[in-house]
Length: 55
Image (cartoon, rainbow, N blue to C red; front, side, top):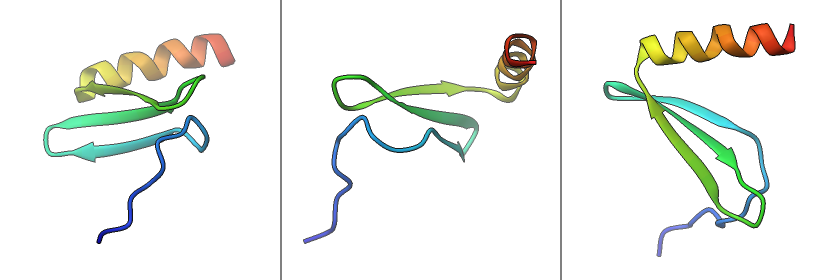
């Protein structure tokens, strides 16, 4: 039997390139993860938006 990751909201944000998309997994309150898939252009736009907020 294969080992499985527990489905909890704990843990770090994960980002991985999967074939033609970039998948970002964000821990969610109440358990589970929010999965967002984006292309390279959308990822660059997200980066710029986050830089504007974070500094």
